[in-house]
Image (cartoon, rainbow, N blue to C red; front, side, top):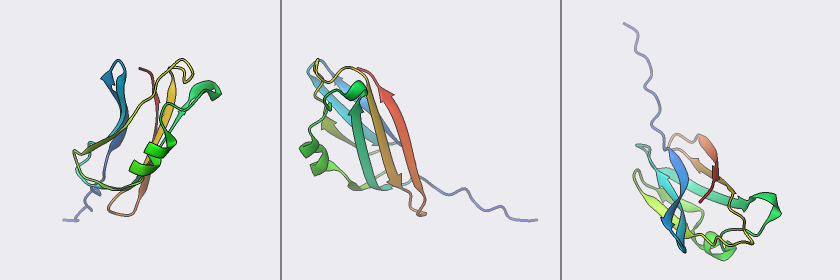
Length: 109
């Protein structure tokens, strides 16, 4: 009987808005069974509006060297009339097998 190679164990990272009112965060979570490495995050407002996050905070917290399975990290969201309410977020990471993944999400509070 021929053995089939096992599916590689990978991370499954997603981005979502958490919190309520003036205490909103962009939260990155690894829902996969494997750790995600070198996790990068970019967030932009649609229509050329102001960014909904301080670049200095994003630069302090990302890239994440390793995001374990089930682990979350977040950055403060700054949502005002100047940022609009539609955001494009991209999270990218490396799996333990060396493969790269990128997920784009449109977020609305």
